[in-house]
Length: 76
Image 1 (cartoon, rainbow, N blue to C red):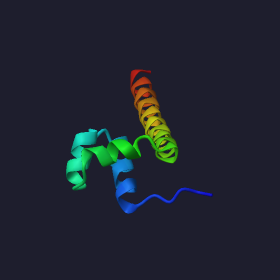
Image 2 (cartoon, rainbow, N blue to C red):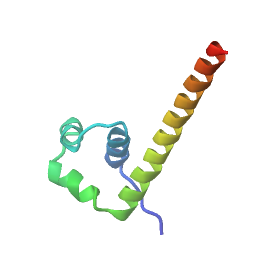
Image 3 (cartoon, one colour):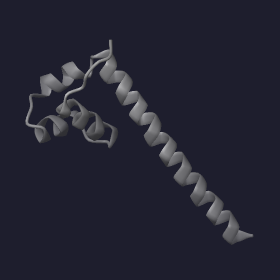
């Protein structure tokens, strides 16, 4: 059985992966901080956050690699 995320949970995941603090996320989504803390303990929420962070890391890694390669091309 798969877990169904609510719209707010998906927004919270995206905001968290973007580097926003839990307090800011709760404020922005007009919810209690305790609710967000509870969500952070749900295994499916944790897993989805980790997947999002893997995507963020991969994107950053690719950008850094491209920047290094462009710099090396200018040097040679």
